[in-house]
Length: 394
Ligand SMILES: [Zn+2]
Image 1 (cartoon, protein in one colour):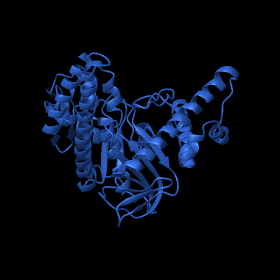
Image 2 (image 1 turned 120 degrees about the horizontal axis):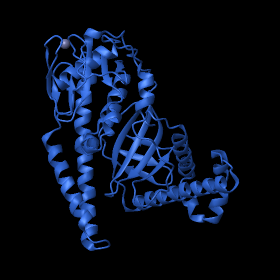
Image 3 (image 1 turned 90 degrees about the vertical axis):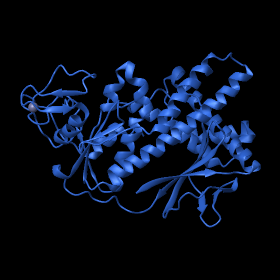
Image 4 (image 1 turned 90 degrees about the horizontal axis):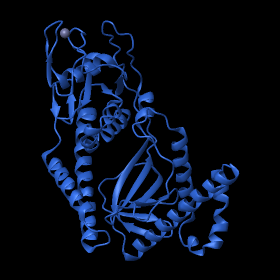
């Protein structure tokens, strides 16, 4: 199976300059190809293929000789990335969490990247990454792997740090999960007060440090937007903001990885049940969207999906129209008038008292296994492939 490993790179001054040059050339080729493609379509209603774009590269290199200074395969990769962006745009469906927009021009202010599809390798002994035309770049050897390197994507963050994402084929098949068993399943719901709620009754909160950083981030971005354009203070504030943003992302990733590892890998449950479209449904509520985006549920679900796949666990989803919060887990009665503010409610039919979120997490398991409450007909469980296609954006 394909696995990705990420390493921090420490290029020397010369290597950093070469990398920056490569980023610039890749960006140039990407933007040039996009403009060419769009113009051909606007003027002649002609769709330019990736093959045709590749064939234009030698001509471009004659026109702009500095393009020849970088590894040519990274330029072809740039065109491949543009094509992928077009594919995503045309193939978009409304079930997606976030609809991809029309491919945009790349700016030098964004995160920079370049992909090396061949001839890149890691030497674990010397802790270096060998890149064609750039040399052996030192890296922080956080972990090793076995397998064949497929692609190495080098990137530079807006704060000037270099990273390499190494895609590795390890030749191992995904383990086959056992037959789903409802009694050995874990329901995972995402909430507002708590980050996640489990069918076991456990509630997982956002870590205190992350919450504090988020508060600081909000304060800093407010003060940044008040600064005068083009002023020195603005530039300083922008850098501070980028650094803090980077820190928040790292803290959040750390929390998410630890949490999903515990829920998927360490947990004994062989089947995980989630409400696939929870994020999309709640995003529609404008007032809540800010905190939801912060909580990074999309990333949480993405990690659960691939960790389940890698570890031979089943992943089932509760149907899109299942009322997981409003249905009594004991008797199936539905409380139609349940509002977001009701944290606790009791069932008028059987008298059970429910914690809103724990009841929902338990119901996710029931619905995922095809439970149909009285008076309802639609509820179905599907395999992880359909869930993957709806949740993974690429
Ligand atoms: Zn009831």
